[in-house]
Image (tube, rainbow, N blue to C red):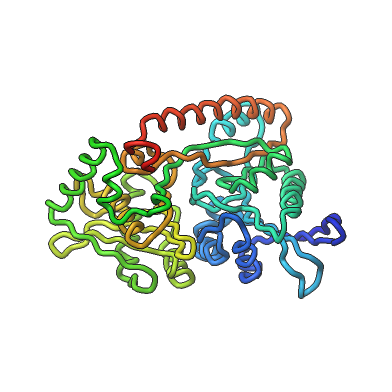
Length: 400
């Protein structure tokens, strides 16, 4: 599908839609990402291509790709000047910004909430740039193109998830409704980074420091040892074991894994520099694994998936927080993002931050009702963060 874009400045643009992310030029997509304010490994072309080719995020799983590309001119040599990931959704799974109540309200009033449009990285609540643009003037063009698609396809709504500040400002300027959720991130000390994990603990309140040391001793006393591998050091056998752990986590919650084994094989091949795997062993046998995404250039790390083949008290904390934090400190990383939800992360040195989303609803009355709800919810979220800040794990704000 394609549509001629209106003139912006003195240039004409062509807007095209793609039902397979691989149809977009990878080098041009990644070049736009590298220009953005908040790039992450999950927005790379390789990541979306793996999601699609592996069958993890496709029409069959309720994620029908409809990526938007804006080109400087028509023809074979057209330059990609703006783009974004976009999916038609017929459910709300794998998003981490919850709108089930909205869907239920639509249904009770005899209206269809699905399909809806989602501008996001599937299954990935990691904040970052979503609207890839050569210059800022193209963000409104992207948003207008998505709105036009929503109206022409009779989608009920559009949802922009976990975007950066520039994306959020543009969405608000376009009349989209802002929303906030809470995540928990660890930030290295500045200007003098932590020397080691003990140095990090020194800045914490006595009870928090004592509890962490007790939890770590409990795991060590059980005879558990950790190894970590990154990039191409992670063998196929390591990935196989990790995937076994990953699927066990979903089964424990009576759920189905979103990502296929083939997906992990593809990102291991196409983005090896972005993966760090911790494996826990006892008596020579693997018992747990934790996969961390890393951005070596920007010194950022992202907690992603974990699982265990043996139950052991405090193993989750060690595998998902203490081992990655110790690694981040040892390697001079600036930030570790612990992901969505979980106030228990705060006691382990991860502090609350607001994560943004923006929403457009076609139905005027429902849009007004949702806007009023989001106003109240936003005030509650801000109050929740303020309350958490009053009970932080560190000795003082200066120690953060």
